[in-house]
Structures are given as C-alpha cells and as structure tokens.
Amino acid sequence: MEYEAEHRIQAQANPVFVTAKTAVCLMEQAGILDAGAIARSLGLDKDEFLRGMADFNTVLGNALVVEAKYRTGCA
Image (cartoon, rainbow, N blue to C red):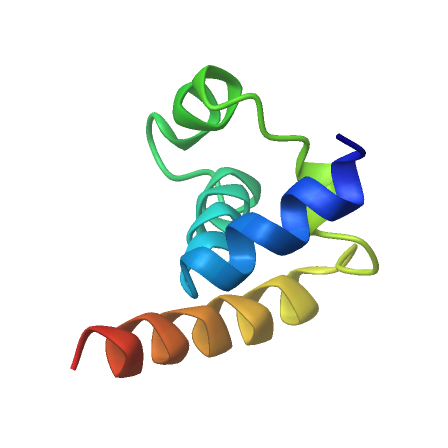
C-alpha cells in the first residue's frame, strides 16, 4: 500500500493519529527530554511532520495548536 493511502486510512480510523505524531516531532524540535528517542522508536521523520516550521515561533505556534487539538479531542 502506498504511504499516502496508508496514512489517510490511519488518520480516518484514529483522528488523533497525525496530531500525536506531530506532537512528538514538535517535542523533539523543542528539545524535550527523550522526545527524540520516542520519535526514532516510532520511525517518525520530523521533516515530514514539521515542513515549513523552521523557526522557533512557528514551532511554538504549531505546538500550541496541537496541544489545543489534543485536549479538545480528549474532552
């Protein structure tokens, strides 16, 4: 199965699929302890999830959005 199709199926089956992976990549980018090890163990490519998020303010803004989506989804 092509990556895009698999990604779409997983995202439809579990709405927090992309949010969770992006959150781990954002945590790694922010230097949070062990986030890099978690990302590597999950086989995540932070470049895939953090495209266009090169500077600190962009990463921070996206981290806040991901956190808000996660908390809303859990509520």
